[in-house]
Structures are given as C-alpha cells and as structure tokens.
Amino acid sequence: MTPPTHILVGTIGRVFWMRVDGRGTFQNSLQAKKALQRVITQGMTNLVVDLERCPMMDSTFLGMLTGAALNLRESGGGSLSVLNANQRNLQLLTSLGLDHILQLDVEGNLWTDERKEACNALQHCGETSAECKAAQTEHVLSAHQALAEVSDANECRFHDVIEFLEKELEAGTAAVPA
Picture 1: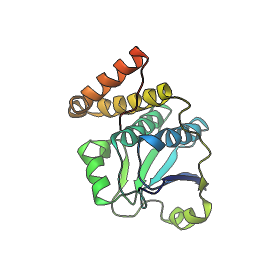
Picture 2: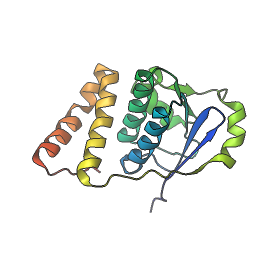
Picture 3: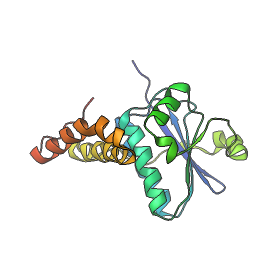
C-alpha cells in the first residue's frame, strides 16, 4: 500500500515553500493548487515546490504546477522554482516542456538560505480537496488544459484526456480517471 502524501507549506522570508511528501497526484493536486493560488492572490511572487520526498508526479499534478506558473506570470510575474526533483520527475518536467515556464533547480543553487529553514517552517496544508466529483473533474480538466497550452506536442498528447473529461462534465457523470 502506498503511504499517504502530505502537502507541507510555509512562508520563509519572501518565499512561499511547498514540500510534497509523497506522490504528487490528482488526489492531492487540488489542495496544492488552492495553496498556490491563495499566496499568488496575496501578492507572493517567489514560490518554491520542493520535490525531495516526491518519488513521482502524474499529469494532473504536473498540469497544476503549469497552471500555477502561468497564473503567476499573468498576475505580474515572479518565479515558481522546482527544487530537489529526482531524475524521473526532471525527465517528466523537461519532456513536457515545463522547463520553459518553471525554474528547475538541477544544480541545487536556488534558495540556499531558505532550504535550511524549510524543515522547521513547514506545516500541513490547510487547504481542502474537492468537495464533489464534478469539482475534482473540473480541476483535472484544467490541469490538462494547462499542459496542452505549453506546446503542440502536449496538446496532441493530452487531447483524448481533455475530450473525455469535457464529455464527462457535459453528461453530468464526472468521474475522475485513475
């Protein structure tokens, strides 16, 4: 059985820090999205997603990160930095072209002072997950649409998923794909 994932968050100086402690999936991406949206709305422009304890991410979680980076860009700029990504996660991020909109720290040089404080400053995210299947399906759809916006290759890659989710929402039988 897979251990549960925890989304830990905190503000360290001028940086909002999020650590994914477990798998980044459609099941916890709405919680992460809400936390990122909240701090962007509050005017925070330096966002960090720490993947040191995240063995893998699914396309919904990747799309949520994409949407947050695009939202940050639209709201006046800033950076969404991804730290401590393992080789698998780095490969996913770069193959989807997300290295063009996210700041990937492959050398370990970003936010060095804040890294030391992160362990003590983080708490469990207080944001909630989806209230119903339709809300979760809308979230999964928006995440995949954000990925599709990044490149033509992604649009082709996720076309069928987007089409399926749109039909589910139209039919009122919103089911989240596993």
